[in-house]
View 1 (cartoon, rainbow over the protein chains, first blue to last red):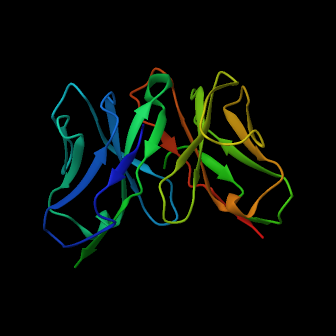
View 2: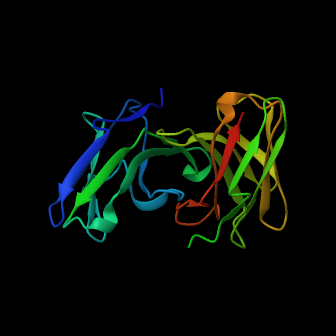
Amino acid sequence: GENVGLHLPTLSVQEGDNSIINCAYSNSASDYFIWYKQESGKGPQFIIDIRSNMDKRQGQRVTVLLNKTVKHLSLQIAATQPGDSAVYFCAEATGLSGSRLTFGEGTQLTVNP
Amino acid sequence: ETGVTQSPTHLIKTRGQQVTLRCSSQSGHNTVSWYQQALGQGPQFIFQYYREEENGRGNFPPRFSGLQFPNYSSELNVNALELDDSALYLCASRYLRGTGELFFGEGSRLTVL
C-alpha cells in the first residue's frame, strides 16, 4: 500500500539542539518523498524533498536521509529554534508529476527556550 | 506567503446541507489539488484537477466534487454533509512542469453539526 507513518507523535527539544524526526513507509516502489512543516492555523509548507536515487539531501539547516533498505526516512534540523515549533509531516509524492501526496500522521515538534 | 488563498476561512453547516469552498491559485498554476485534514491527522488527498479536468481521485465518495476554472481558481463542493466531513480543507496548486513544490493555502475550517 501507500502507508506513510511516523514513529513518534511528539518531540520536545531545547533551543539550539539538533532535532531528528523519523518516518517509515511501506511501499518499496515509492520514489519521491517530501517533508512539510505545518504551523498552527496554516497550511503545510514545503521544507525539503528527496528522490529514491539519493540517500541524503541538505538544505538550509535541514537534512533528509533516505534508507531504502528499511524504508525509512528522517528529517534532521540543526540548531533548532523556537520558530521551528510545528507539526512535521513526511509525504510520499505520486501521480501527475508527483503532485498527489500521501501524508503520515505528523510529529509535533516543541522547542523549549 | 504562498499565493494560494482560500475562502471562507471558517464555516458551520448542518448535516445534509451542501457546501462550496473556493481557492484562488497563483497565476500559471495549472494543477490544483484538494485535501481533507481531520483534527490531529495528516491531510488526505481528495482529488486533483489539471487543465480543468479531474486527474486523480482519492478514496472519497462522489458527493465530493470539484471544478477548476481558466482563471486559476477552483471549487470544492460537498453534498449531503455528514458529521465526519468536519475538517480543515486545504487547496494546493503548482505549475505542472515546475520544481515539484506544491503551494498550500491556509485552509477552510468546516464544522458540520
